[in-house]
Image (cartoon, rainbow, N blue to C red; front, side, top):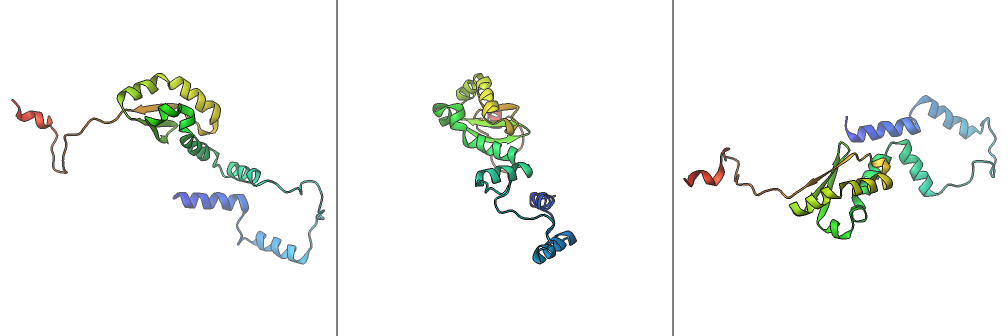
Length: 162
C-alpha cells in the first residue's frame, strides 16, 4: 500500500467519508436547522484555538509526531553535536531507530563514537518522540579499484605486480 493511500485512509478514519449516508444526512439536518443541541455563541468550548494547538492535535491524531520529531532532530544536528563537530559530520538518515551520521574522516568518526553517550542523552531529552535507540558513525569509504560494469572480483591492480 502506498504512503498516499495510507494517509488518505487515516484522514478518512479521522474525519469521516464525505460521501457516506451519515454525512449526507448530517448535512441535510444542518441545512434545515433541526439540531438537537442548541448552539451557544459564547459557551464552554467555543473559544478559538491557536494554529499551533490545532496542528499539534492533528499531527498526534494522525500519528505524525514520530516523523516530525525525526526531521526536527536532523535539522537540529548543529545544536546537538556542537558547531565544530557539525562542520565535520552530517546526519544521513534514520533507519530502524538508528541514526546514521557520515563523518569527514576516520578521526572524526572515532571522536564521535567517544561522544556517543553524550549525544544519545541529548537526543533522548530533546527528541523523545523520535525513538532513536542507537547511533552509527560512518567514516569515509576507502577508494574502490573497481571500474566499470564488467570488472571481476579479485585482488585489483596488485595482481600483476609479482
